[in-house]
Length: 235
Image 1 (cartoon, helix red, strand yellow):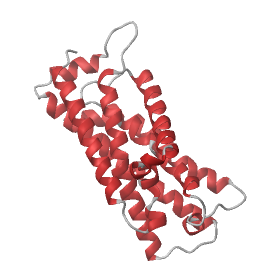
Image 2 (cartoon, rainbow, N blue to C red; image 1 turned 60 degrees about the vertical axis):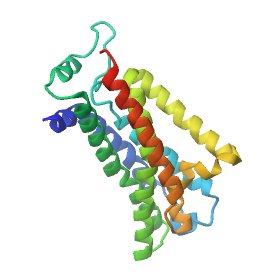
Image 3 (cartoon, helix red, strand yellow; image 1 turned 180 degrees about the vertical axis):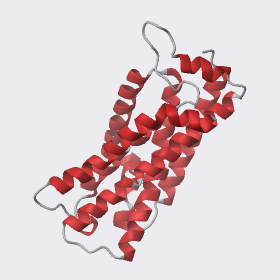
Image 4 (cartoon, helix red, strand yellow; image 1 turned 45 degrees about the horizontal axis):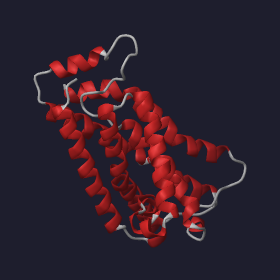
C-alpha cells in the first residue's frame, strides 16, 4: 500500500520530469543542423558535455521525498491532510521513509536512462554509426550518472524533511548551481567533482570508481541524517 500511495503522490511529478528529460531530444530533432555525437564530443572540452550532467542533476532533486512530508504545506489551512493520514498509518517512520526514498530513487534511475538516449540521438543526427562499444559507453554513462546523482538525490531528501516545496525547490536549484560552480572553479576539489565524473565514461572509457564511491558515501550520510530527523521530529 505504501508503494501505491507513494506513486499516487508522485505520479504528476514523474510525468513532468519525463517531459523535462525528453525536452533536449525534441530540441535536437527540431534543429536544422546536427550536433556532434559522443565521438566528436570527446575531442571537445569536457565542460561542454558537462551541461548534460548539470541539466539532468535536476531530476533527482525534484523526485526526492522524506517518506512523511510528501505534500507541501498550505498557507491558510496548515499541513496537507495526506500528511496526517500518513502519520496515522500503523507503520514505523523508518518504513515510511525507506519506501518513499526507494520509490523516488527508482523513478530517478529510470528517468535518467533518457540521458544516454539524448547522446545517442546526437550521434545519429551527426551521421555517426554507434557500435557495441559505444553502447557500452552509453550504459556506463547511465550507471555513473545514476550513482553520482544519488548524492544530489539525498540532498533533496534531507531538505524535504524541513522545507516546504516552493522553498525547497529554490534551495535545491541554488545548491546544485553553487556546487557545480565550486567544484568546477576550485582545482583542489577536482578529484571530487561529481559533475565531471558523471560524463567521464564518455571520455575515459572506464568507470570513475573513486567518485562513485564518494557519491555513495555522501548519499549514505545525508540519508542517515534525514532518517534521524524524520524519526525525532514532531509534525
